[in-house]
Length: 139
Image (tube, rainbow, N blue to C red; front, side):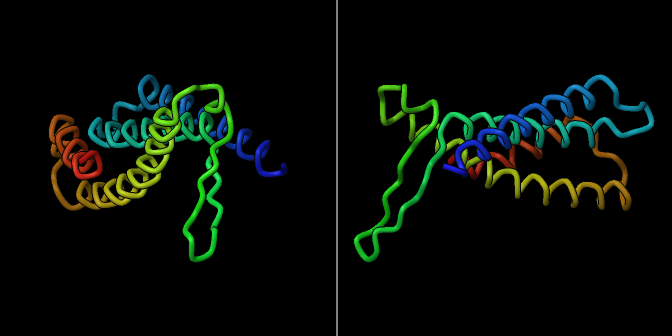
């Protein structure tokens, strides 16, 4: 009982602050900052926004059953949906978001190091790199 309200409060705060951060990156980035780094940050915000929203929709609980396996129980607004496939789709988005967040954070740190050492590659190359980073997870 204690985890459910805590989970939904965290999801609401996460979504709200990611929307605020996305707004600030798009409309209030200083001209001195590199636009390519802004593209990396926007990508990270979008991942976090989708993950927070999906996590709000489906609240999975994994219950170990010993040597027989595990049981996954879904709760949240997804219980009003009729299809088990929809629940699984939202849960897949949550897992995808958690994985991509870690990859994207690593890429952001590497990119900042790249900007210190070398010339800015430009926004187009950064967007291409983000799609390349995204492609193995989608497959």
